Image (cartoon, rainbow, N blue to C red; front, side, top):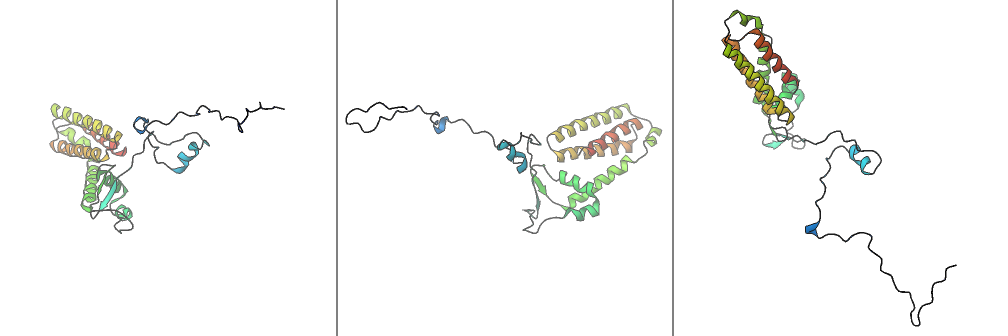
Length: 216
């Protein structure tokens, strides 16, 4: 059995020994390191289990990209305000492809934009025009004399559009990507009227135009 040493005369309690601090003292506010960036607010079941060490991190994405708000009557669409536009009505009238393209074209994806019936009607007219030119018989333009400069120009425009759309899609700039496709559609219609390119040139541009639209 351990017997502590006797205390000196007049001392009732043994002296308190100061222990070394377990953690270093906190730094002043101006010297504190910056806080880590906040986690993306994904679904609860994706971030809670890893935080409590139940499961390994399984985030389904590397970066969260929020979409903007749709404006109707100078106000954000809200059920409480009663200004929500039902997409089902427009899907029945003009089709789901028109509605999807218009939502991407209405403005930058992260900023949103104002809903307009005139705008969605314009999108419908463009897709109908695209359907029309993509179903034309390209052999009809082979009956006319071609222009080598026109052939080079339509290929240059097509390649330029491919580059623009590719870069815009990577940056979620769907509205400008669609604008580039509209410009290519107008150019193709001009060359169809002039009959200065071959059917191979026409098929090349039409095929890439449709492929770029499908990637949206």
